[in-house]
Image (cartoon, rainbow, N blue to C red; front, side, top):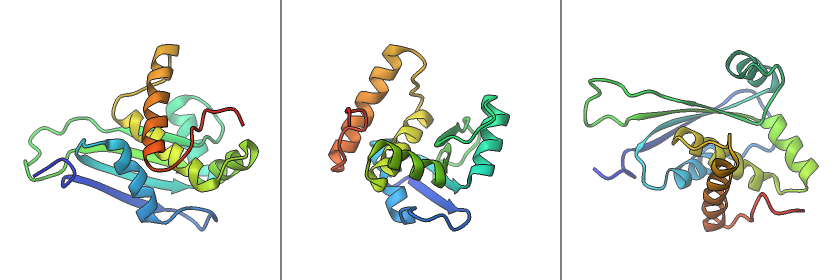
Length: 156
């Protein structure tokens, strides 16, 4: 079984936020960022209260944020036919919408960027140092460009 056949994306949309791409579109961007890595990812679209609580509890930052990633650990004894869990991406519809508006970006393009960004975190990428940030941004730009989305880091 190829990695692509073992890739699964579950989408949970909590509430009725406007401007959220459909589940297939959300899954598409996660799969694009996985670039052949097999695994299971859950994407949970939430409101500001839930993302704020998660950000406070897991990152000691008591404010809403755009996206959080929670990598899964290895599961001992997982049957070979089961897809390895990569983790969860939690994304706040209101924050993504506000950022897209403030930054003059197309809303769907910003969703794509946040999903690619969150997925790369699940794969172990980070941006704590300048070098890490450069490497992660380069990957994001390439994945987004392959899907027809412009460079999110270009000056507007």
